[in-house]
Length: 294
Ligand code: FES
Picture 1 (cartoon, rainbow, N blue to C red):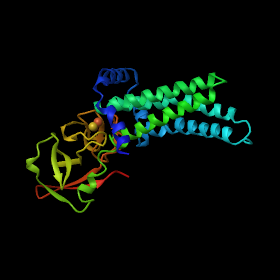
Picture 2 (picture 1 turned 180 degrees about the vertical axis):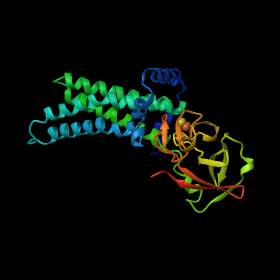
Picture 3 (picture 1 turned 135 degrees about the horizontal axis):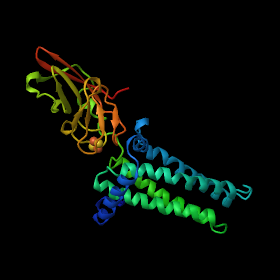
Picture 4 (picture 1 turned 135 degrees about the vertical axis):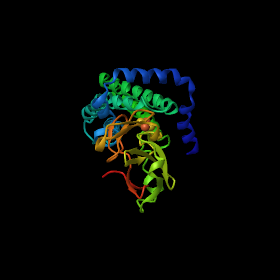
């Protein structure tokens, strides 16, 4: 197992991929639409990364085709299974482009070591898609090409899973903060209101959980400080809007979160930011981490 893990970790160290990784990110940033379409590719409306969910289609259909191919080989009475297997391969091929687009949109904002792994993952999937497409054109070698494509896709998919779980690409980087802050147990004194500068977000702490705290007049707004996307310190970001629409934009990849409810208003993040309730009492700022918005 350790050997397999080192094998999957290896591409993250392949610095020779950096020129290609940088080029792929620059091209994606230029050609992919921005705004709400990019948000859709990230999975922002669903609150969940779109790419891994969409990948179920090519993976599911290709594995189903493999099952039919195996059945046709080992079960003499299985009947003609070539047509349904080819239909499944065709669905795999058709689903590759939208799935890849969603992955490409996420790829743009990954760290460079994650991008190296993502390049290898995407290359494997491109080879698999080519083999599936070739299987549709070849009557004679269709089954062998389908099977080869599915084997390659399996390895590429496993690397994608490693990227998500081991390298935390697409994971929520703030899920643990409410637990670090004591799971909503009472309010914590953050110090005098007078110590907070106006309109300049500051970092404060509840237990081991960092907060991004913003003074607006005599009011105080706050969110947890570790960006859900890839963990940047939000208090170094830019504040926009006013009142209930006040937001902070992450300094790393420009995800924008609303203070009121932690909602993702823009950028690559899909998970909302755990919210913080604040009070000002006797000139002192009190805060409590609420947990992720429901
Ligand atoms: S770390 Fe990427 S948007 Fe915040």
